[in-house]
Amino acid sequence: MAINTKNGLMLQAFSWYLPADGQHWRRLAKMAPRFAEEGFTSVWMPPAYKGQAGAEDVGYGVYDLWDLGEFDQKGSVRTKYGTRHEYLAAIRAIRERGVNVLADVVLNHRMGADGTQLVLAQECDGQDRTQPVGEPRGIRAYTRFEFPGRAGRLDHYKWGITDFTGVDYDELGGTSGVYRFVGKEWSDEVSHEMGNYDYLMGADVDLDDPRVRAQLATWGAWYLGLTGVDGVRLDAVKHMSRSFYLDWLSRMREKTGRELFAVGEYWSQSVDELRAYLGPEGAMSLFDVPLHFNFYRASTAGDGIDLTHILDGSLVSADPIHAVTFVDNHDTQPDQALESTVEPWFKPLAYALILLREAGYPCVFMGDLFGLPNDQIPAVPELELLMEVRRRFAYGVQRDWFDERDLVGWTREGTARHGVSGAAVLLSTRAGGASKRMCVGAGHAGETWRCVLGVEGAVVIDDGGWAEFPTGGARLTVYLPAATADKLDSIPILVRPEA
Figure (cartoon, rainbow, N blue to C red):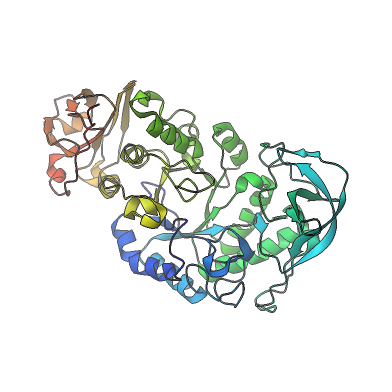
């Protein structure tokens, strides 16, 4: 199946603090019909391989890429989410409903080594990895990965000192730091934060080594062939050579004969950095991190925000074809290292901005959709309605009115292909009622449009396709043609609380 990004909708189907009960793959399989009904075109599943913490590992502390919950390693056979059999069954269940599956691919590092090796290393300044600290010295690094629980099944490759660039711990001296192995160099095709941000954590995989590249290509071909997934979410690309992924993705697309949609995680607020990593090839999309931070800052600034600039500096504004937009994810949620959780009052507005506009490929966070007490994330009650409006009505020409700092809006004209469609959306931080005159297209002349989110009310479209759309004090207001609005469930009104 090819990934549908025309009004496509992605679900991040996990969070950081899901119960480590081994039932998640089964839960996702059971939810497959709901994913299809709610308009999701792809589901991003968490890392499926054995991590250093075994059945407790979220998946990013990768130990063995070949163990999908099949071998007794790191204290368990299953992963946090279940067994290999259950993983493959969940993928089949989702794909059988016509929904694509995206696999989380973590190739930057390895953790939980089976043993140590002596190596000559150069300690680097933690804040500028291009600067040495002292002279090179011998350290004992956790770089021996022999996978005894797998005993050579599926693959015989064993990882050792030559496959890595550096580590962050010296067992010999019992000291932590950033240690680059003598004879190895950090990649120069990574973020220049901290001088060079090749090193992130654990044993850093040497992606410039031809032998390593060949091994990762072998694994990728096996994994994609076994699972049949439709695309990949690529972890930590900020720390990985872009030439590696240009090569790896090209090989995987050739091997599978499929489009293989790819979206990378490049954690930077600079849209110029994101565009530089994308380059002219456009081999992948990237998550729109700058837009997330626009939402985060707006939500913490309260009514002092200027809504006219909410999209400024975002990837979706600069390169909408390669932008995967999101509000929050597992890294931004409470108690995570990159915590920057968008405040609840602003989340409906943020979701309207990614779901009801024409540009970008939006990703809904599971926590926001369902509410996850373990993660301190309440459900966004408006979210399901916004998703339905996207699926059924948010089509056609878009017109913007980003002309008042505390009141902005846009309309979608709809298309004949989608029947009675079109929408008018207002975001407001203004105290009390407000309104904005907007055009929905002359094709809607004479129609009555009803408010389906915000205050109850209706407007009549004039002969030119214009109407005055009131907010009545609601922070988010959505109007739809009355012919279809009556079919939608009503939800709570979002009225600005008085000071």
